[in-house]
Every structure is written in structure tokens, then in C-alpha cells.
Amino acid sequence: MLLFCIYIKNIGGIFSVKLLSVAIPCYNSAAYMRKCIDSVLKGGEDVEILIVNDGSFKDDTKEIADWYEKEYPTICKAIHQENGGHGAAVMAGLRAASGMFFKVVDSDDWLDEASYMKILDKLRFFANESETQLDMMISNYVYEKEGATHKRVMSYKRAIPTERILTWDEIGHFLPGQYILMHSVIYRRQMLIDCGLELPKHTFYVDNIFVYTPLPYVKNLYYLDVNFYRYFIGRNDQSVNEAVMIGRIDQQLKITKIMLDAYDLYKIKSKKLRRYMILYIEIMMVVCSILAIKSGTEENMQKKKEIWAYLKKHNLRLYMRIRWGFLGQSMNLPGKAGRQVSIMGYKITQKFYGFN
Image (tube, rainbow, N blue to C red; front, side):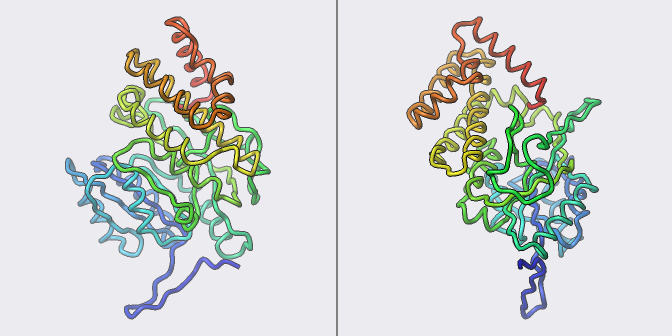
């Protein structure tokens, strides 16, 4: 039986291993990071908070991180490093983490307290009482879109049975846009290390790699149907802002290639996991394609052709499945009129399913 309360004797005293490590990457985040950290602090002594200052220079991010470490020395740890981007900050948090489980919370997001308590209760159960080793816990996230009166919830109830330990063979069908994001997951920390997770420096959208790479290493998962993570949408400089994403299309293409190179999906033993990972790659290809189309530049349209050619060279069978599926065809309609139809279809799908 796994025990969560592990005690390590040291000359200076006795230190308990934390249940959950939470990494908070911060880059010039002074305006909003307190709200995030305060929401994570509500987990108490079972939680370790790793505040990673990724080379901030415009504001008081460093000082705020140091203040929390001083005020909450048994919970908070400030980590200062030269700027390396979101991926480098997440990896710094993972290297410093000691908890049984690991989660990333971006500094402009926050956690729902009631859901948080339920999450911790369930993690304690798996740490202390269950004979099954939990690799991944999934929960819902909420789009906290600035100015929106209705908060859209990304729930997985129709795809994943709730509140019981599962293997991949027991999951159902995911809808378009219903893929598992970094906001949704808590991973067993040692599993992240064992799978060799590496996130590239100075690269946006690495959260896709963070979620995707460990999936074949997950043997047991659990879905708790609570609206745990609050995902803020609204800052003009946010990486998911459409104009920003178009300007960073090269980053999206880079991440997609890394994911394509990670696995030969037809060697994944679980058919349902394979199907889900193919869906994830399909969504990545759609995002790359629609960003190129909406940019309106010939340069980006050439990049669109190149990413589809890369997929074809990488795995012809996978290319045929995605390229000639409904979404693949809709992203490759000929001519200016075809591109307009692609954009219209994407907007309808985006509105219906609620993704960015």
C-alpha cells in the first residue's frame, strides 16, 4: 500500500514529503500572480508551491515570489532563473518538486477552493489507502473569459466514466475540442520523470507536449467531475489570443512536429488511447492550418503545405487518416473561396464546442 506521509530524518529535523507539488511559472506576472498563489495556498501543508520566476524584469515578480517564500516557508519556494520561456519554467518546477503528484497552474489562472478540497481528498485516498497506483487525475476547467456572462465548462463526462479508477480501454469518444489540456491534469511526478519529459526553451504552446508525451505511460487514470481550474482568457498579450497565435505560427508548427516525432501512433497498444492521440494530432494540424489561412499571407500558406508534407513523410497511414477526414478536407479546400469556407467552418465549430 502506498503511503503519502513519508518522513525523512535529517540532522536539522524531520521533513514530510508533500502530497501535491504545484509549479507556477511567472514572467512579469506581478499584476495577477497573487490571486493565483493565494488560491493554491488554500491546499495547506499537503501542498508544495514552486513559484518559478522566469527572468522577470519589468515588475515586482521576483519580490512577490520571495515574499511568499518568507511568509510560507514550509509551503512556498521561490525559484529564480534566466528567462527560458514557459517550458523551461515548468521543467524547473518539476526538477525542484518533491510531491507525489505534480500540477502546473499558470500565474494568471486560479483554482476553485471547493473543487480543490475534493481533489486533495481523492489524492490522499490514492496515496494512503488505495492499492492502485494513480498516474493521472483529470478534472474540468472553466473558461474565465473577460466580459463573458456565461462561463463555459470543459467537462469530460461523456468521454470518461466518473469517479472510478480506469485504464485507457475504458474511455469513450471525445468530441472535437474536448481534448485534455494541461489545465485538466494532475500527473504522478515520478511518471513524468520516467517518461523522459522535456519541454523546449523559448517556445510557446509547450503545454501540448506536457500533456501529450506522458499519455502512453499512464496505466491508471481517474476523472473527478469538478470545475477545478479557472482558465483566464482576456489579456491582449496572452499566448492564446488569435492575433498573437498567428504571429507565433512558427512556434505552433514546431510543437506539432515535436508531437509527431514523439510516437508512431500505430504502435500504441491501446486502441482507445491511440484513437485519442490521433484526435489530438488532428486538432494540432487543424490549428496550424487555420492560423495559416487566417493570416492571409502566401508565406504562411507555404508553411501550411510544409506541415502537411511533414506529416505525410512522417507517417503515411496517419496522414491519410487525418488529411482525408472531415477536418483535414475542410482545411485544404482549394482557392480563395475554399479558404473562406474553411474559416467559416472553423468559426462554427469553435462557437459550438467552445474552444479557442
